[in-house]
Length: 536
Image 1 (cartoon, rainbow, N blue to C red):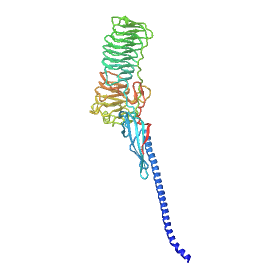
Image 2: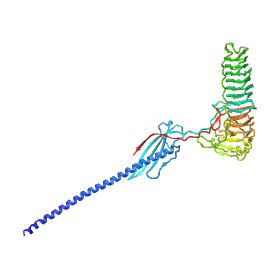
Image 3: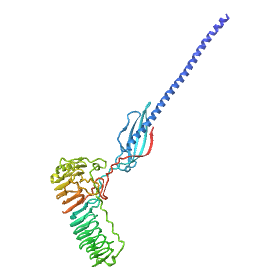
Image 4: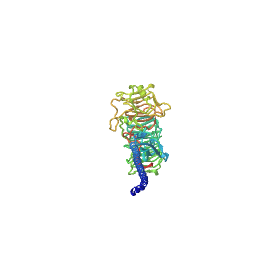
């Protein structure tokens, strides 16, 4: 009875204990669930952070790769927008550049060919994928070496150059100056006899020859002769006269002749006309004579006989030792100019196209020249290897629309007009007979006929002409704009040469040299000026 009573008393207490345990279990479960959720959140956050970090690294690498790609190409002088990649992680690049003339302003795009471009900015945006797109932007600024144009055709040399002149007659020749380069005449060997009037602008230099002007020739410059000089009646030298060689007198200034500058001679002189400056005669001795006037002093290694009052004794010094005759300018060697297509290119390195005329006839050659609308080489020597290009008559008139080089073994110009098309500006015609033998002497093609400029050839300032021929040039023309470089040339008719310094590709006629024209150098990146990340 007692046991039953005790059991009956405890049963309700056990029921209460079971309810408390359930509460405890639920509480523990809730805590565990909270820890589980917290752990899951931490894992998710960790994964997201890791993915974002990876994408940031990839975006940075992509941005740097964009800079590297562009820099590699632009270091070689190339620039080809746009610069983008299509596979993630990818880059997209923008370019801009600065010029000295625009200061700190950045100009969008590939650098121009202006000579004052000094910096290039490369901005590359790298993009990679994570929970969202991640970008990084890298800015790198480079110092920049600007575009250097190729060597263009440079004017050089005298208005007329003759290597070995056999016809010394210069009849009523007028040479004028139309640009900044001084004109004049250079004969490497040969005499010059200037007669029947004429005016030569610039110096006359005779490397191996004598000069005389029997009547009325004017040189507006200096006269240098390696032999004797005779300045005749009514002739004028506005500059200085330099004569050397042997004999007596070395320099003669005739009655009615005038030298405005000084006279230097390697030996005795005869002054019947007037000398505005001083006279130096020596080191060779001998007797000089003065019956005209000398404006300055007179020094001689020998003696001087004076008549009249044109030279007071107080300005005379005789028997002077140690007189040194001025060294005359050297007439440059002949330039051997062969035909190389690569020589004929513009400053950007683009070759002039070659054109071959339909036939060797003058009208067909003229048609090929007239058809050129960009600088062009007309290869007539390939069509006429054994003959002459004869541009004669109105059917051969030339109307230039661009610069043209006519390559031919020989030519004859007569009764035609050479000008530039109206409204197209000034264009140049180069008539070239190639000299392929490198011996610093003119080598005329064996099959070439006589090269000629005959009468009634009319050209003007809009179409200057450069003549280069290793053959003797027979010249009976009347008026010309341009420059003449030949094995030999004569001026037997009244002739006016309006000097335009033209030159040839790679040739320096001033010192008698040729070297292939320098090609253009593209603008390219130099050293890094700065680099940074400008966003993240």
